Image (cartoon, rainbow, N blue to C red; front, side, top):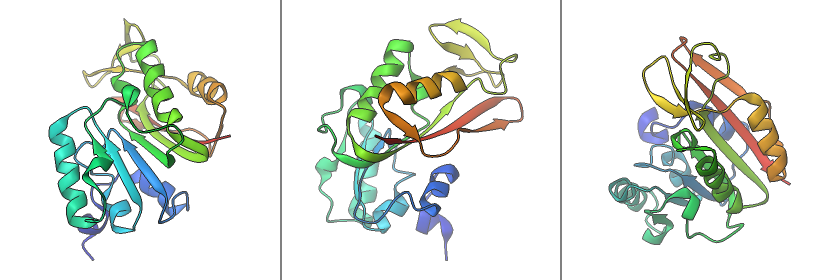
Length: 201
């Protein structure tokens, strides 16, 4: 089996959730920040009702082409060139919302909250939310604050960063429950990526 052909370049932490049974074929799933569709190959192959959005039209065209090849019955309108915080999909439209490496591009706390609220709005009660985002966890003494919640990371990039307390507080404010404890990967002291999985009460 060609693993890349079968699963694409899926985020290994998203694949971990699939292995844990968080997703079932037939579910309506949104990739909020789909890019060129790297996280969608598995779901397209397995018969999910896949949708995607991304602010970059070129990326959305690539995802549409991928879907046309792997799941030709899906309408092109499932894939939209839109920002997460102003997405046109209706409320409670999805059984699962995936938001991988997107939220840390927020410009400030207000923008971050609008992005999160946009994703949460589209999730059904009982639905599953998956996010991977940069955080300060384990790097508290190595990141340099730039203001408005943004930091310079040791790898030289600038990101909007959260910490454990912020994610726990936000989960509660949204009316969610952690599906499992927060997990953070520290990449050799250069950046930290946290996996945040929650269900909507």
